[in-house]
Amino acid sequence: VTLSFPPFRGMVKRLVLINAGFLLLTLLLKVSSSPLLDRLMLIFGLVPSQVLSGRIWQLVTYSFLHADLLHLLYNMLVLWMFGAQLESAWGRRRFLQLYFVSLTGAAVVTVLMALAGVLVRMHTPTIGASGAAYGILAAFAALYGERRIIVFPLPLPLKAKHWVVFLVFVSLVGVV
Image (cartoon, rainbow, N blue to C red; front, side):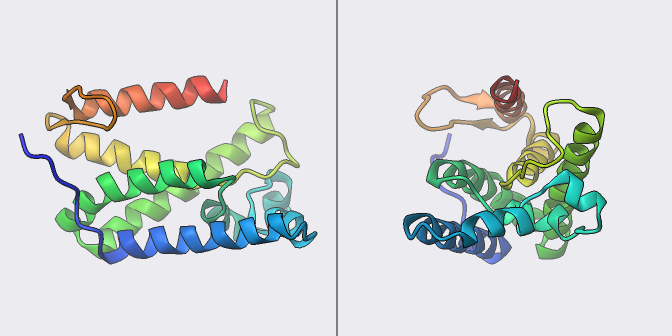
């Protein structure tokens, strides 16, 4: 058993820093009580009715906005801890393909759920990189499912595939 952090470099590092920069911007707007924050969320957050009206950039831009520091930390920790391994194994290009296919796929599912009237409202923004994070977790579990990992603060070494199932379950319970 080795206890170590993955490298913090490459596209993983860039994506974490970009997301952190956007959170800093939103926090500054929130503290200043600027009306720009609401506009930012409506223009760049994923609003299903607006996507259907042609604002297709929202299928990507929503992922760079986060509600608060904990929301960002969870998504970026997943990106770093699991994404760094995938980027090292696959290279930058393939890793970015996974990242953007996962987040746009999650956005399309969100829009479809809104159309079906299930858990998502047509005019409410969705934000965060959770779609990309869960895509990364799924890919990691598919490739390294038998690898035992320890997720802080729980001192239980579990197989990666079991951690992923647990995290997805917790997320679904949180949504419902």
